[in-house]
Amino acid sequence: MRRVAEKWPFSTTVRYTRQLAEALRAETVGGVIMLFATVAALIWANVSNTSYEALRTVTFGPASLHLNLEMYKWAQNGLLTIFFFVAGIEVKEEFVHGELSNLRKAALPILAALAGMIVPALIYLVVSWGAPGAGRGWAIPTATDIAFALAVLAVTASAMPAALRAFLLTSAVVDDLGAISVIAAFFTRHLNLLALLAGVAVIGLYGLLQARRVRGVGIYLPLALLAWYFVELSGVHATVAGVALGLMTRVHSGPGEDSSPAERADHYIRPLSAGVVVPVFAFLSAGVLLSGESLGGIFTDRVVLGVVLGLVVGKFLGVFGGAWLAVRLGLARLSEELHWRDMAAVSILAGIGFTVSLLIGGLAFGDDPARTNAVTTGVLAASLTSSVLAAILLRVRVRNRVTTQDDG
Image 1 (cartoon, rainbow, N blue to C red):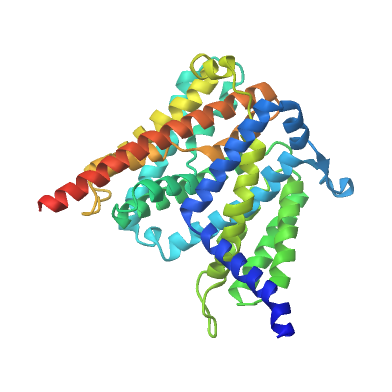
Image 2 (cartoon, rainbow, N blue to C red; image 1 turned 90 degrees about the horizontal axis):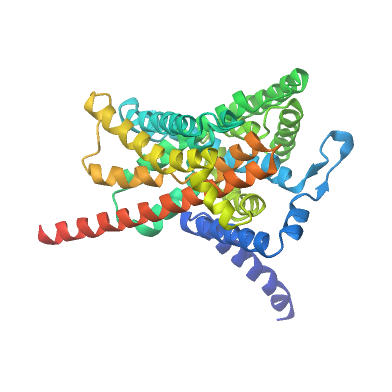
């Protein structure tokens, strides 16, 4: 009896841990936690901005390895690498097993995603033209936050056809791939070629071991850490290592395997990403002072206005217009389950930039705290606006579909 009593707390802890991890795999839960982290950051920053900034700028890490970084930099360069590793796995899964594996099916979300990056960037450049340093921020409104967008869709329109979620997920995956390419190409300032080659070599070794079906976390975790370190040292943003490792992870299960390495990695790492990585990054990035001046800057600061219009208007015009044009030109076809009104609602949903937009904003204006805070305010305002508008339209579409079915 005593032995059972001794084991009981441990078994209960394990059970609750598993239940928590399972909950964090749900899109709605991750989105809610991220929202709470954002609200907490805003409250703290506006109640005691000094203590909030003191927390963000706490510096730690081995200086001998050039890793003596501020806390928000650890979140940006370290934790978000885990988020992008999961994104890399999603990209590969989509290319091998998902919508992107079929060119005919993939054409619609790919073309919509590409237009959804180009149009917001153009709107931003037009609106912000002539503002000092504005050119550095053109990529901020090009990104869609997968986690937040899917969470809003799951909460407001779970009854919508699966094809709508597949379109949003696939276009957001393409969007993420584009965003990480932009980060690698345009936000690498001081390139250490030797470190970069070392990082490429480690990532290549990781991929070779995956291809040869070598198993063991004890092998891959040190390789992943080495790859991250060398890419971080190279001057290329370290999140690129996360995407590269995700793309190198095997998505086919081998003999004697119940699931592929990608499935297992996603199973264990996604809860960490949704429950810790993204909320911590949001908490350390979203704390801006909200005053009449900062909120008024949304309409008077051309850089901030460009970000807001790029996300709210540009994403809608790009994603919806790209999809419509692709269908009209015969390059793609719209699923029979969907209506163009559904596509309009989900196109507005694509205007939720948040995680990646905040990351790019920090990279673009990191040397100008005032500008970074202004841009962060713009990203938050645009993401909130897109969330609310899309949620309303999606609820209307759900109600109309139910009414139509009842009439039928």
